[in-house]
Length: 289
Image 1 (spheres, rainbow, N blue to C red):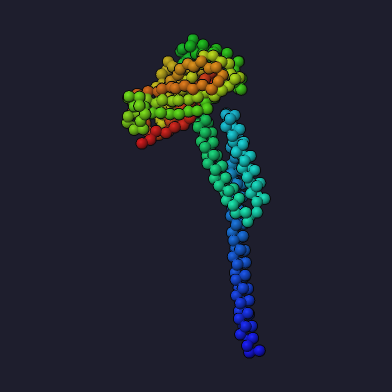
Image 2 (image 1 turned 60 degrees about the horizontal axis):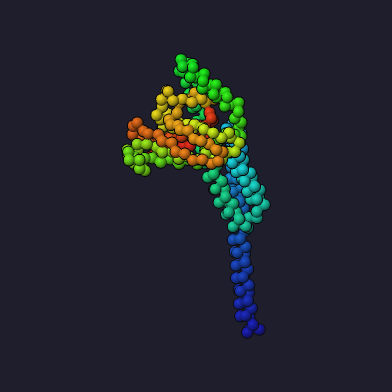
């Protein structure tokens, strides 16, 4: 009996140690699961907040079908990811981490769309105000205004919404006096705008004029000339540069130049492209040191 007593004591101590480790591990696992549940709930709340934001943007009057479709697709994507998150087990740490990364990606995409919406809204508001001002200023040139209005009326009668052209590529290059690329603000003498008009087989082919309006950081139209106007909505607006292109219905690229009459200003600019009296592309860009 005396010989077996130490073994019994050792056995009891071993069992006690095992029980202690088991309880400790169980407590740790419980805490980990609770933490994972908390993180999942937070992630779910963030997805729900993002879904609400998308609902708000869908109520805006976005005058761009392509952008509206992109917003709708991203909104559906958020809903699908939210549903997947709800049925994902908290122990599936890998998938929850992937869904968290997806949330960050969707947020970044949404920020880009919001900037485009703001840019289009600002552009449309500015053009509407300028239309009212320019209509009053050009009452004395009734013959020219009447001709532009008749051309706009004729275009409106034959151009359907589906036949509107659209810019699908835009690139700005700043040039110095030798027509070489430069990023030094004081050396910029000219802006070069490379663009591509998307394919559209429903649009009537033929000779078309591409108008470009560049708005500087102070809200002024660059190279503005009261003699250079085109019809837009119910009035006329000035433009910075223009050229003609023979549109065939296929994707087609072109280049427009806008020279600077003074040193370039630092800040945000906006380039608006028009064809057939329609705003077919609006692109913000920044000039900085």
